[in-house]
Length: 206
Image (cartoon, rainbow, N blue to C red):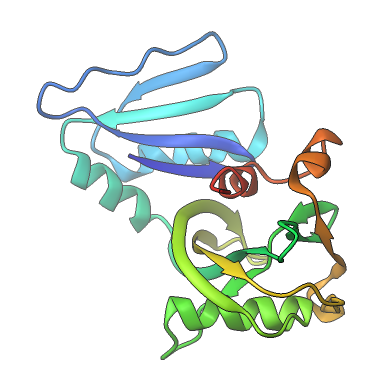
């Protein structure tokens, strides 16, 4: 099952084949059967770009591969990588960018592995050095539009990383205002403004 965040609302693509039981939905959720037409998917994507009234939207199909292929076909796929980084005190490295708390990440360059990209982006966005790369934790998906209106589906590969405590240098040219170490429980208790997909990554903590 794919979960794609559109304007902070999760859109789930659900495999209804082989006798699968459909999910139960609540009053602020939608369950929709895929008609087989890619334009149908864009109608719901456009709707979610304009409203946050739903807790989640689920689109299901017996032909799940076609559903996923048709959805992706509406977008340019952008591959990216980033890190959930801990220091020796168990603090997590958080950045503040464009009014949201976030984790360091960025586009995978041509010829670069996702592991290499994840480490490079963390170094560039925070100035962090002596990074020890750990296992991949999860993947997240979200959509956005370019200034010219092109639809982008961004897939981010997230890795666990460790590094010794050190002063951080936020990358101003990437609009990063702060890069700081945070005790995660204390940080989350403040109800920070943070992307839902990033919260999912933080849930992968030890």
